Length: 230
Picture 1: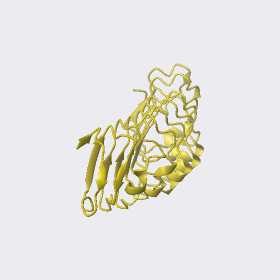
Picture 2 (picture 1 turned 120 degrees about the vertical axis):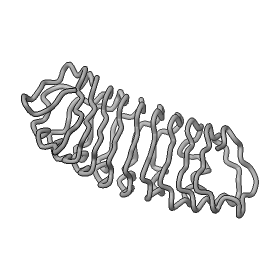
Picture 3 (picture 1 turned 135 degrees about the vertical axis):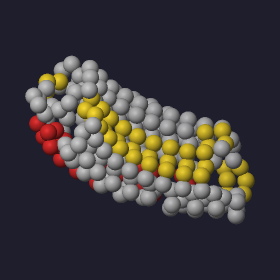
Picture 4 (picture 1 turned 135 degrees about the horizontal axis):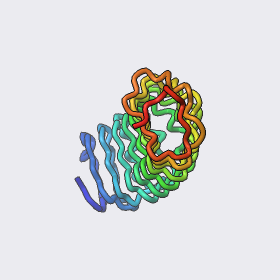
């Protein structure tokens, strides 16, 4: 593990076998040569100053086996276009990236993605329709995204989704066809103050819901007999 470390120099034949790198508070400057982490599987850069133009991305894009990427609290990030190279990611964590305004449509190419975390992304205004292409996705966490007002219609194409957390978000309406998410076990929607109207009747099609939480959603109307409110 490194913290706020400044790397310089030539790394030829030094990191080719590296599989896990945790580099907290990574600085924006990246002045290294021959940094080729081709075997890297886990990369954690929480609390870093990096942004889309960070020169380090050109080296890390060589990590074709990367499965886990944690960029939590990287407050200078504004978009995710640079992530398009990581086709084999299974876990992408972008929690509390306060400057993140949009998720680039290229995320639809991450066919192996199982978990996407966007908790506390206070500037995130929308999700692209390409989210619906994440056919393997099991967990989508959007809680505390205050300015996110809608879910894309394509979200109902996530047939393997098990957990959807939109609690304390700005979302105003649930998709009418949310019942198509047959594998959904948990829908966490507590304290969504803007959520209004009726809960979609299609929710009765959910095969085995274990937790449907609408606590504190004062503008939301019930559909008799169709849901359990925790």
